[in-house]
Each structure stands twice: as C-alpha cells, then as structure tokens.
Image 1: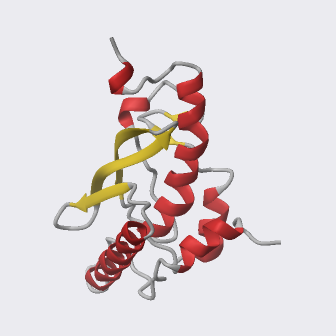
Image 2: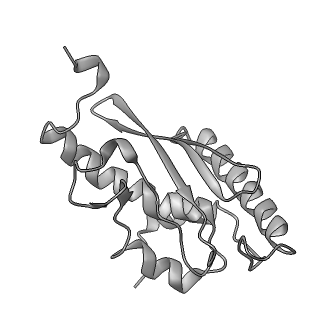
Length: 168
C-alpha cells in the first residue's frame, strides 16, 4: 500500500528530493541544504503554475530559518487566502517544522496553540520515513495542502470563516 494517494504522489514526483543532510546548526552544510531547498521550491512553484495550481507564495529571512507566505484554497469558485509561517527547528531535517496559520487559531480543533496546524497523525510519520530527503516543498504538499483541503470546506460550511466578498 502506498504512503500517499496516487494524485499526491504525482505532485510529489515534481518536487526534487534533498541530498544534503543538514540543519541550521550545521554552519558548514546548512547553506548547501538551503540552496537545495530554494531550488526545490522554485521547481515546485513552476510546476504548480504550469498545471494551473498556483496555491502558495513563500519567502524566508536571510538565514533561511524563518519563513512566511500565503496559501490559498478555492471553494465553490471563491479563493480563500491565508498567511502562513514557520521556523526551521535546530533539529531539522530530522524534525519537521510546524506550519502556523495564526488567523485561524482557535477556529478548528485540528490546530494547536499558536495557530499550528495538526500534522501529527498523517504527515509526521511520512516525514520520518523520508527525511532527510524531504524538504520544505514536501511539507507544504503533504502537510499544508491536505490540511487546507480538509479544514477549509469544514470551516466554511460551519460559517466559521466567510469569504471577504460575502461579508456585509
């Protein structure tokens, strides 16, 4: 049995794997890992744009340890956009990072304090099996994207969030 559904695997195959096993504490190899991360993200974003699935933007601080961006989810022809952020832990890539969507904090039970989305059951075991080859793009594809696909329709249906064009 595959770890991920076939359609997700197709997307994953478009995200280059990492080869450098280094985190922010490794001052010698972290710049090389970071270069791989950027290259992988650029390819992932280009692939998404080519397939008409341009759903996130991302940038980092100069050290590559703090990241932020926007992610979007289309529901019933309306695009919902959210700011997200994360910090690379010192134990990366052994330990994945927590993705935060602060504006949704307290609006769903599938979120921890600080707006951290719940990745424990489905994403973290897959990361553990595939680290250090997985990187930021993989976390977005396997963590953030499925979380949005599950939670955003639920939050909309229960009127927890409303599209800006529908607000009075």
